[in-house]
Length: 66
Image 1 (cartoon, one colour):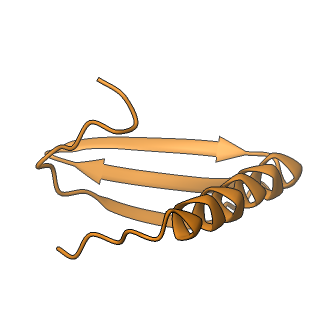
Image 2 (tube, helix red, strand yellow):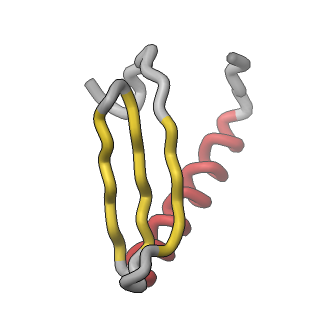
């Protein structure tokens, strides 16, 4: 298993601020709920990593259509 291993699992993801000033990424799939809370600075680092991954994926030049 790894980042390149495809799965046939549907999941819902929500991202937003919590009442306590954290940023929550909430993932729900097949009856399992995963709340992940981050300090705002950590959330910004994750956003930077997402942007870098998107740019790297874009540079590969192959897009799979679902």
